Image (cartoon, rainbow, N blue to C red; front, side, top):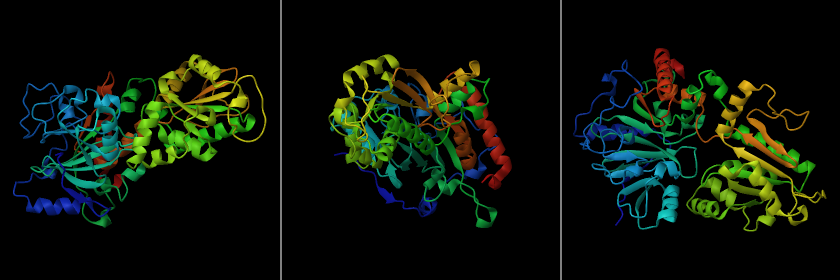
Amino acid sequence: MKPRPNVKEYHGASLLSYFHTKSAKDKSTLTSLTSSNVNGAAVVGAQQISMGTSDIPSKTQCPFYKWIPGTRLTVDAFSYGLIDGCDGYLLSHFHSDHYKGLSASFTGTIFCSNVTKSLVSLTFGSHLKVVSLTLNSIMDVCGVDVLAMDANHCPGSVMFLFRLPRTNQFILHTGDFRFNLSMLNPPSPLADFVPQPVSHGKPPPQLHSIYLDTTYENAVNSNLDYCSSQYDFPTQDQIISAAIEVTRERLQKNSNTVVVCGMYTIGKERFVNGLAGELNLRVWLPAKQSKLIDMAAANGCPVCISLTKRTVSNPKRAQLHVVPMGQLNLSNLLRYQANLGPPSQITPFNQSTNHCRSVPILAWRPTGWAHYSWLKKKGTNNSIQTTLDSSTILPDGLRLEHSSGNIRIYGAAYSEHSSSSELKKFVSQLCPLRVQQTVFGGAASRAREQINEWLSAARQLGPSRN
């Protein structure tokens, strides 16, 4: 029988009221967070983090940043197989770089969101031991209080908030996430850690550590000839709105235009659904994406539920087609265009007639990396094309990447990771004692210095940083 954690529902009242009540009854001696050395290194390196009392054997090959210290829990550590000393394997979301190593023969107990559980079962079989964590509910996982909350990354993605029973410390693991302000405002569980004006009474509790997705902060600091502000991009909603207007204009000029959107195996659903919903387009999905999105919808993902209402099984009946992100290039689209046939075989956007020899294609590459590649090219070529035509400037965050005949490929800075300024806001407001990067690369050390600067500035401001 699969284990079930104990559930204590959280519905927007103070998250800490439960923890404080439980702490008072805890027989173990609690270590005050305020006694920690806040003047020490805030972003920890490989040799700085303490594994607490989890008694993890030193022979394990699992790196330190995959463990939640003081517990027998790991996060996104499936590439190391069954790990000595690990009782619970948490999975933040269903992207292959996070579940890499997971197979149908895995015998450990996996903890994740209900949507992610459904995707794991669909891919690897329902015999795996997978326990779903109810969002915004405090659950006992292997003796540790864990609260999962939406990470705004992909269907089923979550952040994990841990309360360590022996020390009463709070640790946040973001997984992969895209920051938005709602994460720090009520009824978000994290709102309790954000300082309020002094008149509101007691100071907020202290987050001990944040395990942080630094995907784009590393990118910023690997290109030191650009300042960080250049690497920021608009919000997801702003990018979707801008892409809708560009697409609307193309469809009004030629109603036979087929819109092609790049997607990952799972991810970018909000972008696709935004275009389809606003422009009333039917959507065709490749078989693999269709199965995953149908499963996510059946298990409660709101965006996937909306998207499935617009999908059709026959691509000839759809005016928005999804293709793998890696196939979104001119040569592939030329072949795709040939397979579409003449315009008369495509159900038009409206009833106007606009005949041509081949179906026009408007393609979207919705990724934050599109923004970075644009900045690099802009640095060496000031004449880079950013216009829809010779007279119209594209909105911020969009650019025309390729144009050949009646095929246009646009980059859209639609990211499911946080930008540098968003990370700064997130870290500065929560102001933990420590930050542990979970994304590494050549610029990791510079990114670590940058985060330390944010923390130092936030501590000097105190509660007024809000």
